[in-house]
Amino acid sequence: MAARAEELCRERSVQFTALRREVLEAVAASERPPGAYDIAERLSKPGRRVAPVSVYRALDFLMELGLVHRIASRNAFVPCAHEHGAGENVVFLICRTCGGIDETTSPEVESSLGRTLARAGFTPAHSILEVEGDCGACRTRSQGAGRAGA
Amino acid sequence: MAARAEELCRERSVQFTALRREVLEAVAASERPPGAYDIAERLSKPGRRVAPVSVYRALDFLMELGLVHRIASRNAFVPCAHEHGAGENVVFLICRTCGGIDETTSPEVESSLGRTLARAGFTPAHSILEVEGDCGACRTRSQGAGRAGA
DNA sequence: CCGGGAGTGATACACTGTAACAGTGCCGAC
DNA sequence: GTCGGCACTGTTACAGTGTATCACTCCCGG
Ligand SMILES: [Zn+2]
Ligand SMILES: [Zn+2]
Ligand SMILES: [Zn+2]
Ligand SMILES: [Zn+2]
Image (cartoon, rainbow over all chains, first blue to last red; front, side, top):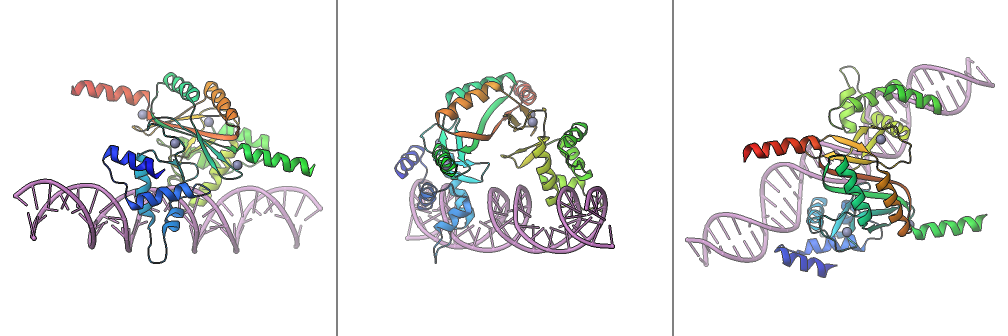
């Protein structure tokens, strides 16, 4: 993760500073997608306080690079699971049971959405598509529990 | 708008109170999709203060009925432009120029998204799909200005 | 009359995000 | 070397968004 970040930063001649690395690692290491304040708390230790505003700045930077995504419906941040271009549409799969957030792309959805927007005379700049539901693992678990209970 | 609300409330045996009506009308009457605090301010007059918390409660109620939608990427609320069922997927078209938010449905997008989710082993409960860009009117305007300037 | 539920008012609070300014370190210009 | 600009971070304060909690009223059935 950090390796790719360094590569991207070299390409664009921007700095991959210690703070930015720590924020990226914090996002990647979290079980559940953390909020900015969670990250600030995680990076703070006795003797070193990382203010939320610093985290926001690092997150903005990482989102610019496409290394991190923001989940609008949760005010949370996830590490990018793919290496996609900036313009690519992504579908976020938010599990309401385990809280995990997976990420996928779908040319099929993208093209049908493009047609729908064209029909509406709308020129898209970017879009967010977030689906809440149950991931396969949780569904399997709950079904097993249901059968055991019945 | 209010007529449909009354009908829905009769069906479900819930109350369509004065406050709920006022909040619904405030959302519908606003030029731009208002935030909850905007609505609270709009409904408050000298001698009568409507607290944001009351607005939130009314908005929750109205969203339950499907009369109002929440725009996650804007923290704003829009009146429902259609009379769709609760489960139906909606695409929100957010114009970054005029700030207007339009709403459309697309069986095509819905089915392709369904296939994508099925492939991922994900069971959807509900989804949000918000596209930011330029509406037809604004695009026409800006093109005209561009040509005039060139 | 009394009890209970729905709705609202009011206050306080938690959470999320931004503005503004100061300090620090680096690097090129002079 | 010194100066000045630039990027980055720290710090504080603040704006905006949403929720918890309790009290009060109103209405309706027993
Ligand atoms: Zn990604
Ligand atoms: Zn899950
Ligand atoms: Zn609608
Ligand atoms: Zn527009």
